[in-house]
Length: 203
Image 1: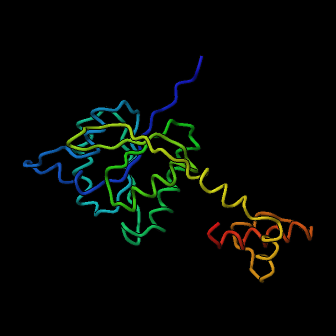
Image 2: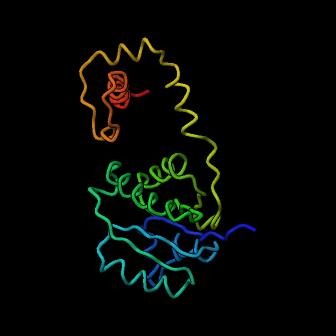
Image 3: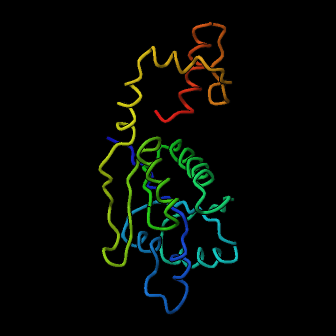
């Protein structure tokens, strides 16, 4: 007999969600629509809007769902800055993955940058289901028909030992990503240097 896992949905709070509080709004927004359709135990909301805009929305949303709502205000350089969006998204997905919950991502809210980062993370480091919401089609599961890791492997494996050795001839400091590998072996030191060089190239 299997153990029932918590069903957790994560997404950004978007402008169309906040507009749902307007009495003239034509739609309750992607998040409320998803919660009305999907069976989830909890929803994790990331936002970088002012609290004064988001708090009334959260109160409104709580009246429309039985799911636990956990909202997190985050700091972004910009909602279209890939680096900061990636760092924040990865941090929360990593924490949720550690809970062993069944994860889903609602892609619709937020900027195209946020959507692209969700797809990147959800197809590689934190496998999960994807959903989208629109007035035309409602809430539907999204099938993303490619594997990012599979597309990376052939290119990386095409580098032979001679090519890797050639790349490693230049001096390159081993960055923090490889600092946890502690060794006195000359061979392992070389491998760490090669890893650093490869990490800095499109391979």
